[in-house]
Length: 334
Length: 260
Image (cartoon, rainbow over all chains, first blue to last red; front, top):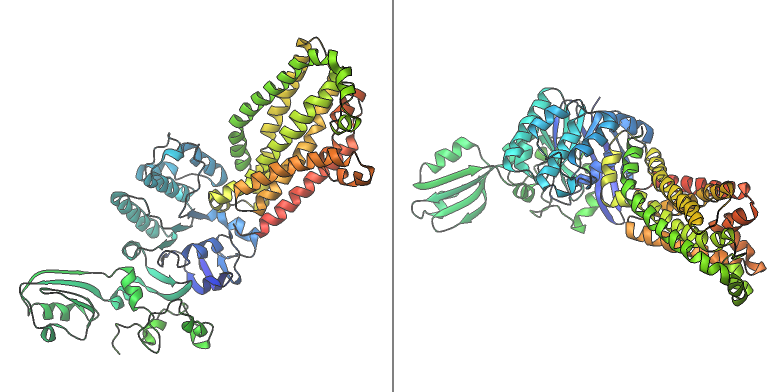
C-alpha cells in the first residue's frame, strides 16, 4: 500500500488552480521530495492530504484512507507526523508544555531521544523562540510519537546549517529504519541530499516525477570557468553548453553532456579556477518543460492552457520517463 | 480524548480570574449605591416614564431583590457577561485558524466535531469562575449593606442564567466558524449580543413586536422574576439550552465542511 496516492488532485480558488490534476504516489519506506518554488502549490497539496482543505476534484489516499472519508483520515493520523511551514503553537506556553499537550493527543515515546538532537529551550515560552527553535520544537512534535509517515513542509526553514545537517542525518536514519517521509521544499540542494525520488510542482501542475539522480543527471551541471587568458569563443563553446554567459576571462554555462567530456574539454585551456556544481532549482525550471512549439517555458501563459486535460497530458506526473521521452527538456540531445 | 479541553481550560484560567475581579468590582459598586438609592427608589420610579421602567425591568427598587433584578443583573450579567461569552465564543475557532494552530491540531487524530465541542466545553472555566465570584459578591455585599437575599432565589438567578450565557457563546461560535478573521467574529459577537439585548427591551414595549422579543436570548431569562417573585422559568431555560445546542450543531456543521 502506498503511503500517498493522489489521483488528479485539483484545488481551484476561482479561476486560479492552486493544484491542477496532480497525480503521484509515494511508496512506503521512501523519502519523497516535493519540490517547487514558493507559491507553486506544495502546501495546498499537503493541506488536502491532511483533510484541512477539500479537493475541488480528484482524490487522494493517505495510508489507505481517502481524504474524502473524514473518519478514516482522522483514524490514520495517529500514524502520521506533520511539520507545517507555519508553526501555530500556543505562544504563552513553554516548549515543554506544548510538547506535553501534543503528547496527550498522540504519545511521545521518542521525545527524550529527539530532544538530544534538537534542542529548543523547553522552559521558555514559545512566543520568545527564534525561528530555529520554533522549527526544532516542530520537528520534535512531528516525530515524538514515532509515526510511520511524516509530512514535512519546508522543514529546514529557520534552522542554522549545523541543525540542517543534523536534520539530514536524522532523516537518513529514519529512512533506514523504514519510515516514509514526504519532504516539501523549494531548495533543490536539500531535497537532493535526503530524497530518493522527487516530484516537481510548478504553477499547480506536477511537471516531473523521477529519481533525484536522474533529475540531476539530466539537469546538467552549472559550470563557472575562470580563464587565465581570453579564449576564442568558437573554440571554447560546444553544443553541450547552454545558457552561456561570456565575460572577458570567464565563462558561465550549464553543461548537459557527461562529466568526462567536460573535463577533457577544459584541460585544453589554461584555467585559473573551475567550479562545477548542481544547478539551482530555478535554473532547472528554466529548462524544464519548454513549450512544444518553441523554447518558451510553460507558465501561466493562457496560450498553454488548452493543453491541460488533453489526452497527451493524461499520464502527467504519473510516468517518470515521460519528460525525457518527449524530449521537452531543452538541454537534452536527441 | 480531552487534551484540547484541558489545554483550553488552562488557557481561560488567567482571563477568568481577571474578569471575575472586574465583575465583582462592578457588582460591588452597584451594591454600594443601594442604601442611598433605596431611600430615593420611589422618586426614581416616579421620575422614569412607565416604558423606561418596563424597558429596564425595574420593579420594587427599594428592595434588594428588585434592585439586583432591575439594575445589577440586567447590566452586569445579561449585558456584560453575555457580551463576554459572545466574545469568547467568537475566538474559539477563528483565532486558531488564523494562527494556523488549527492545522497542527487537525493533523492529530481528532475529529473537527471533537475539536469544537472541547473548545466550547472549556468555557466552563469562565462560566464557573464568574458565577461563583458574582454569587459570592452579591451574597456578601448584600450583608454588608444590611440586606440579604433568599439563597435559593440567588442561586437560581445564576443557575438559570447559564443557558442564557451559553446562547451568547453559541452566537460567538457560529460567527467564529463563519469567518477567518477573529477580529470580525469578535466584534460581530459583541455587537450582536448587545443588539439582541436592546431589541428585547424595545420590542417588549410594543405588543405588535412581541414576537421579535421572543427571538432574543434575554427574553428567556428574567432575574427580576426569579429574585422578586421566585418564579423559576425552567421551560425558558430549556428553550435557551435548546437554542445553544442548535447553534452548536450549526457551527459544527459549518466547521466540518469548510476549508481551514
